Image (cartoon, rainbow, N blue to C red; front, top):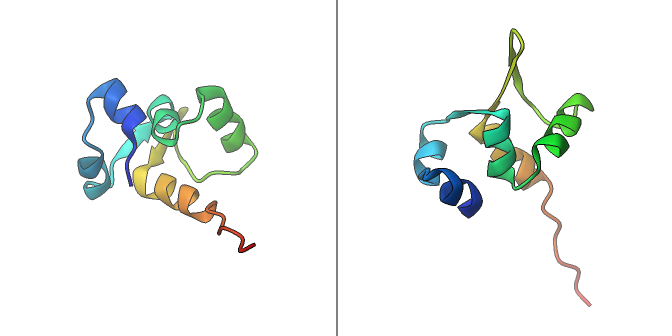
Length: 79
């Protein structure tokens, strides 16, 4: 799975992120998913996405973000 937006913006090798089970800050996670920061924050506040809270800091595991995307795939309908 390619995530060119984050890789292009921050020079990050996506394969390495996934292999290392990296933890991302909220803005990094939004870029990873292709969402705006405010959309991701609203999604988190509604309980729509798994996240870590360490004191006031919010973090996202790359594996959890991938699972979030995988759960939302819609199969093509046969016509």
